[in-house]
Image 1 (cartoon, rainbow, N blue to C red):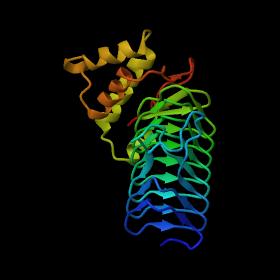
Image 2 (image 1 turned 90 degrees about the vertical axis):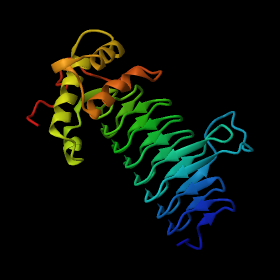
Image 3 (image 1 turned 90 degrees about the horizontal axis):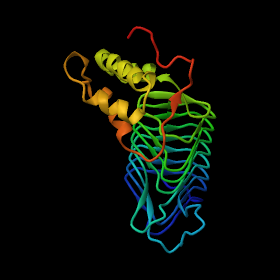
Image 4 (image 1 turned 180 degrees about the horizontal axis):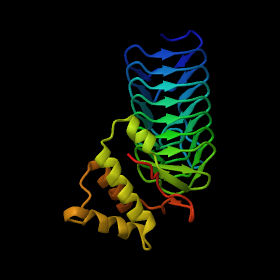
Length: 254
């Protein structure tokens, strides 16, 4: 369904059963998967807000299947030729959220109202960002993370963690892990890995690498714990950390 007042430019690619509501704009460089819903006044594939951008650059936006894009959402295309800003499948982008150029959003991500992602941000699958949260350019947010409303994120946020205020890690997203059916043993290992990385004096990257090399009874074997630790081996920015003196992880029984 395409509303008569919607603008779908020639060249735009729409999958089966997409819904494009009144006054939405789908630019020629946009590719939408099956059953994507775009609500009024959203703009998909607009030029990036980048001072040196050449509008003739052949770049685009790709949106995965079954994603819902609410009112006034903007998703800008990439700044380099042949590149794409990517939003995964089964995502929910609430009203007035903004996805800047070259972002890569994985499947199952929720951006609440007025979330702002700067350029080149990556967001792992099943992550939730609360209303009005803002994320600095080139930041990585790991899978299964939860970002509080109005949070300001300028450092990389490890998988499965919760962050609020200014880069303040509040603990593990245990509720989210349980809701997704993550095994109890994986949650136990994640707690141990969390304490090893954040609760031990030293360089976070070094501590995570050491933890990955542990053997015997101290080894981290579950995929979730290893993904958490491996996150610290890459990236160019520093890492969000717990505030000293506050609880670093949920100590409730799993």
